[in-house]
Length: 414
Ligand SMILES: [Zn+2]
Image 1 (cartoon, rainbow, N blue to C red):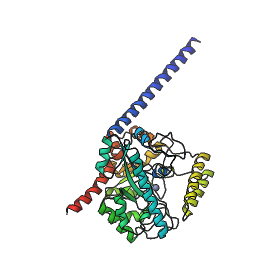
Image 2: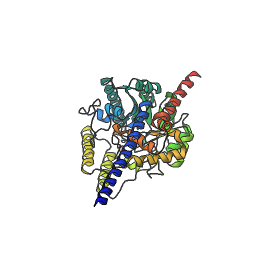
Image 3: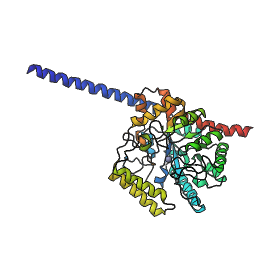
Image 4: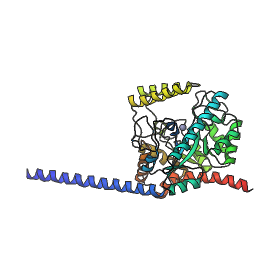
């Protein structure tokens, strides 16, 4: 009996020791992550948050507890997650390429950009619009969030080249050439009809040159493989994939193949790992949820022109779907497998992070902007050095951005 008691006490003590060793280790990892976030310039290069700004019940200056189907980004949550900069995407979905639809998309993109300016003006003590590399660092020093503007889908340009400069003047600093379907610029990686131009159209070639001339980053996320190689043949500056993963880790046409990643590195560009579940880990196609989601996506995609009311209805259905059929999301560890692979293949200087929050991005253990440190902690667990992590969290992206800016000033000096 005495012996048994002693054994129980021993086990109890051992458990206590193990728990305290584990929590110390976890704490020191968290402390290290916080330290890195405090001194690095960290940037997420793709979120679709501007759509939420059109909803008057959403207040970006207030800390929201994460709720499924609701926004994953607000200024206080960015601060809590140690995120200094972000690209708000002025996203427009692809519709039939009629002049009426192009004008509607243009006006929507402008509305999203204007809402972003208004949000930063309303909360000028929390955030500020950034249009250059220097802006980002300056705003970070002020303890505020640097809000850059990107444009997801070049559809609003129509076939009017002057619109590239018009959007540059509104602060747009990258354009994702297309979205899920082909447009007048190039073929998409996911258009069910397949290739239309076998890459970039001749208008698309002009768009890339114009973006180079003005200092807009060319974003190769979403575009087809042929479009990707066409862009690399034409661009005079390094490119970005603002939110893309590795196809070798998750076989999806939206992800970049090893050959594409090698070409991107050769171009000096950067791939920003996305945390959208289907791009991180192949989905289980046998579930009812998968089919319901697919049906909803198809309905949205096929609607050539939907009214504002119909769009609101579709978004509500989408939110309901998330509640009725919660999805088992991949984890941060699954996502970091992509970074591991890409770093091994193309080196530490060409990889970054673009979550796609509010556009589908979010993991089981990284649901919103307040949880960015979980990514850093996993990188530390896998023995990435502080210097490596600083590069991943923004150093690499800002290097490419600087080169794009430099190309413009050098051209002007000639
Ligand atoms: Zn996207």
